[in-house]
Length: 155
Image 1: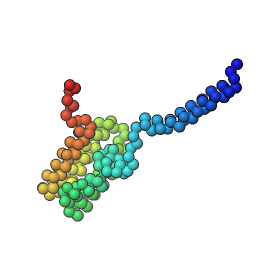
Image 2: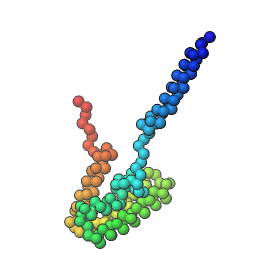
Image 3: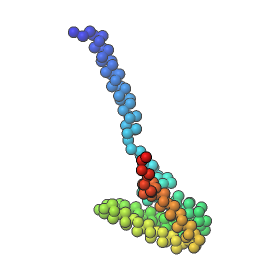
Image 4: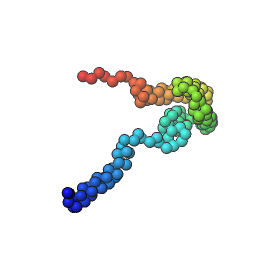
């Protein structure tokens, strides 16, 4: 028959082990969990959007800086962005029955319409700069999504 002290020692070791597991489990869960989505506006976060790219305020700031927009142009483009945001949010919530590809095509059409409206507000010189901005953005997105050149073969 086991001695009382031995039983007590095994029980204490078991309690200690359970306590250690309970203390470590939350830390391990945090390491295994996917990163949380950034908090921010409806576009997905401060500065960057999870859906739809940059938020409208950030886009407007960049355009003001790179294109030297006038006050009237800034007001007009801000209104275009706000209208676009409303349409995009409505499309996301109302078109749940559409396939992902159809929803993407619809949003791309909406984005093209937005660009047409923006270009109508810009001077010819600003349009050229705006197109260059868009090309840089597309290139960054392609590189981030793996659409860039394939990696070199292993040696």
